[in-house]
Length: 318
Image (cartoon, rainbow, N blue to C red):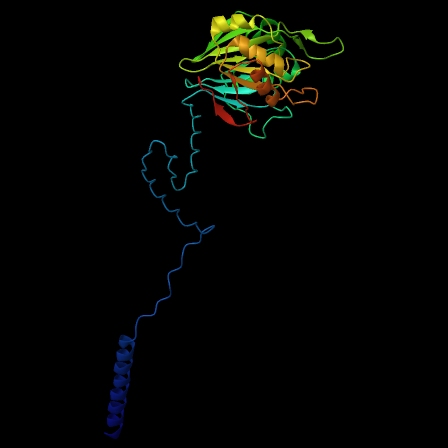
């Protein structure tokens, strides 16, 4: 009886312990090992973000192109050269000039642009024509390189055109006429020599020395005399072309002096005289003041207009 009771107690205690353990295991969360990741050769880089759509920015006339994020800025178009309302002239020292007309023609004459009186400014990048009066180096000057850089047509004597060798050239002679936009250019005589270059055999024959008359509608008629003394044919230039402005050499020695230039102004019947080809070298002694005095002495009504190197000034009919 006693043994039976002991066995029953033992069975009851064992059952209670089993129930208690089952309760504890049920109440604990299920702890599982993390799932193993498949092995890879290398970690894949993160995917690149899609680029943002380019903004739509309208172009506006007269403004620089818009800047779009992520793209290099487009270069702004070069501004077009302003066309003067009147004919203007820029003296580059010595006998070198840049003429601009209302019709958009830009014309260089005897472009020795690195002479001692030349302005310290950028040389012209746009030219329509280059006029060369004769073959001496102080008048041919930078013609070949300017013609190559700008594509301008070189207008000069037939012989000198071939010696300069510009790709775009028109060899002509005294009496010829060329048209450049609104400018009509006449080749006239001059009293001077015209050798080109200086090598062991001496200068080459560069054709006759010449002057140029430039007619501009509703504008001045410009006479660039080149290198010359006063000569009787100036009366014929006056009768035929009626120049209003004369660019005259006054230095002497190689050309006429102020007294000769005053007589030339009288024969040409011009309203305005612009002195040039003076003071570049000590031997060119004539001065604008001497020209003014000579005009007064000879009772010539033409006025003297002095230019400063590098400064553009209008050329008017008055």
